[in-house]
Image (tube, rainbow, N blue to C red):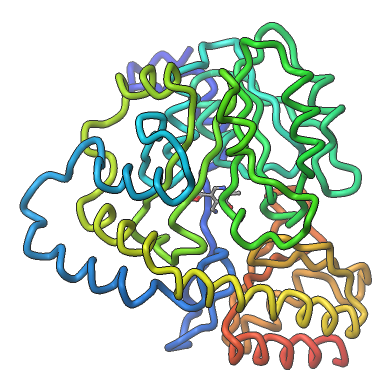
Length: 365
Ligand code: PMP
């Protein structure tokens, strides 16, 4: 133990690497094309923007701590019981709340090799261990995950679709994972990108969660609805889980403008459709074009694609630098253990064309 008397963070905390978001600026470039954070290329919808602007006259007021109007709107949209919803400052906060509520030092969470890091950071802050099941094919292996579960496992996290791989688990795989868990373990299915999936064997876990005492399904307003900057996400949980979390949640964890904009966004079906259509149109077009340049593209089910650069003479890092010199920001995923890959958010038509032009130059250069 250090002897100089200086304050010390709790054990293990300084071993956690801070979360680093996608870059948003390039020196000397006024308007970079930002394809690094899986945001909605269309921005927020008109209705959400208007609701956000209208909220300005109320920002001296505290928000409704239980977000009751938003709760009712979300419950109605998905056919869920309103009292079973947990709202958070982004779905990131819902993961943190689950971890804080269920993990003691020495407990563990189980997730998969390339899982979204937010689960892991907050679990480690609880002095819990993170167990990662190998993903040899860049998709979650349900049996490998089950093999890691022990009596100290409190939560199992699966993102579906997954970031950064873009892969998804089928409804059958999710049911098998759930069926293989002991009842004391909570299965958290992170459906941040759910609305972009078009594969017929994918299903939302909302249905399975309805009657299960140990499933939480999370969703977010950051992706489909384009409200990443406002931080609104939620989980659909068994009532007992919601009631436990509600005791330690910060009193006003979702902001007043966030609540108002999310209510409007949930009702804006035209913007949701346009956002889904953009991804559905460009995901295959980008995939095909990039493969044509000689790079690998993994099957993608979210609003982003993962590209592998197999040629050591044209590595991912050089592609990232080349794109950046053209004003285009993409995400390196070395911190996820994928140093030969780049993750690229699907942009607007103009952004996608600019990206393809630059990548084809890089491939030819
Ligand atoms: N889950 C996954 C898989 C994500 O990629 C993200 C966003 N990066 C989130 C959850 C968090 O979204 P938010 O906190 O904005 O709701």
